[in-house]
Length: 280
Image 1 (cartoon, rainbow, N blue to C red):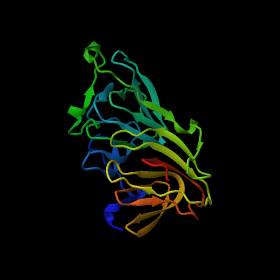
Image 2: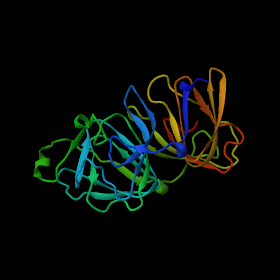
Image 3: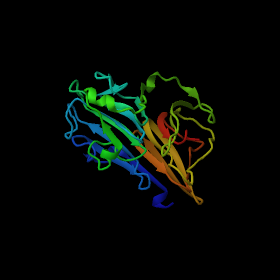
Image 4: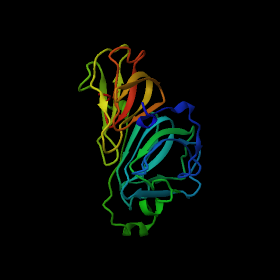
């Protein structure tokens, strides 16, 4: 198989680097799409950290970009604002298993306190550039809103983000793999596929349909939230078996198919975040 057909990473072995888009935070860049300038990355918010280029309180919205995130651990207080007149906002603390689905034109930000007590790790992805406060495209994509009456001059038709604890979402039977379970989290948007959590039980055996990467549009990808999973990639008759464990990231591209082997799929069971597919 060609190196360009897929990217597989043990993110636990990827070093943290300074996040140029959010100075003061760190990141692990997992994949960057040159065509759409969208990205998938892991973010680390150190305890008590705030982006060095802003003053608190701070709030803004994005004109066109959708942001999504899944909290992997720690705590990170964040605020959602219903309108320009909402000066206090609603504090929502990112903790493990919280999922964020942020459409364009949703107001969010940070307040002076509380700040993160233990730090936070997030799996984050977006549909385009300009969401980081220090990114070159931020002046075009992101709109800062003051906390005084001048903000009311912005007549944007604002939207609301969805942030919720995925642990409180009921599991459903998987549509095509008997014994599997899934949780739908978000539908597909431009440059990003639908989001699902999928659970594969230990010692499962069966024959789910392979997942073929589309010729056009966003490539499917997955992140192992917990447990272990064996998958097989196929391209032009060539095969590659990968043993994935917690923290593994995998994206496969046009011409490549992924399937879960009929036997020994998972020794101890696994939960996988799936974007653009549900493992079958």
